[in-house]
Amino acid sequence: MTEAKNIIKLQMQELGQNARAASRVMAAADTGMKNAALLAAMAAIDGTRAVLIEANARDLAAGREKGLESAMLDRLELTEARIDKMIEGLRQVAALADPIGEITDMRYMPSGIQVGKMRVPLGVIGIIYESRPNVTVEAASLCLKSGNATILRGGSEAFHSNQAIADCIRVGLESAGLPAAAVQVVGTTDRAAVGEMITMPEYVDVIVPRGGKSLIERISRDARVPVIKHLDGICHVYIDDGADATKAVNIALNAKTNRYGVCNAMETLLVAESMAGTILPQLEQVYSEYDVELRGCDKTRAILPGALEATEEDWRTEYLGPILSIRVVGGIDEAIEHINTYGSQHTDTIVTEDYARGRRFLREVDSSSVMINASPRFADGFEYGLGAEIGISTDKIHARGPVGLEGLTSQKYIVLGDGHLRK
Image (tube, helix red, strand yellow):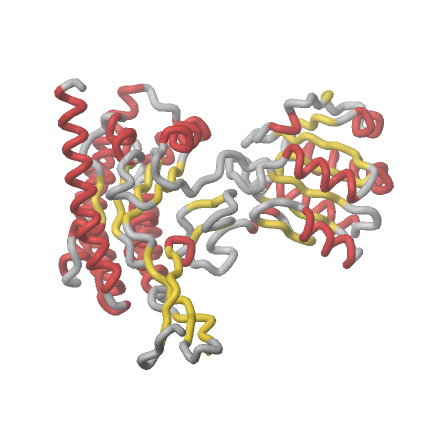
């Protein structure tokens, strides 16, 4: 091991040790202390706007020097409006119900003991993310409110911005009598730090990667710590036999064009054969106004000669842009089969007027969010009433779908007795 790698290993172990100790304090912190920390952090951010913008200017200058694309620079920039949004985000998280300590499912057993479950923090959460410095606030606030400690490793392009924001959060923690080590930002841009963080199960309980597919694939492959993640957002809208045409067109348009570069945008449209001749020409017209490129199966192209030929790879592609693949299917059986074969278990929607087929779609489509007569763009923590989210999970164990405060917790069994002995 080189000297540089050894230094990083020691630094990460120190972060881990501090986080583990802080997590025990955070688990015992009451709601008032946690909310006080969030509100004090909010005041610190508001009072140090100039410092935040100066730190961000250093990141922007370095980014331009490195030749970062304009879209990346835009995500990186901290404006007054974005600082306002971070402040509002802290206020909203402070207003959320605290899940920690909630007791559910209490019941008497034949032995006379009472058995139930209590909601508890996960412990130490490692979060690895790219570019946007506002994620530092979102991630830290959700981990703090849910009684966890967190180690944050932001993108190297936002290094100075993330450190300045973390300073404000530490001010909030200390003013509320909570350990500053409950929120720590990795102090190096060396990628070796990521490798250390994801292989420290003695200090880190779960990893949440937020970024591009290559980052998440690497974390999933190399981590020795459980990972909450999704790789792709290959989301579908299926227009069923007898669907309301107006609903179908509006939902399909919103699902694709509301925003392109997001994980809950539609990438493949499935249309029942009985509806294709009516719906597809209407959709071609509205999509043309947004310059959406259409790629279709043979049946689609027979109706829309201007569509390009869809390949097998198209059904497996998350475009994140103005491209849409379209397949005409025989009905709900074929639609469900297509989604379960090619989808990424993210979000899928049926447009239907048939209650039984809608219920069947809910049961049989194996995705983290399944919808009837609604745009998949609703697959979002805020829209689900979670207040905020730390990401989307397409895993099946622990958390699935948008991950909010409850997703950053677990449950333990509790037993109440009065001198009870097992016979």
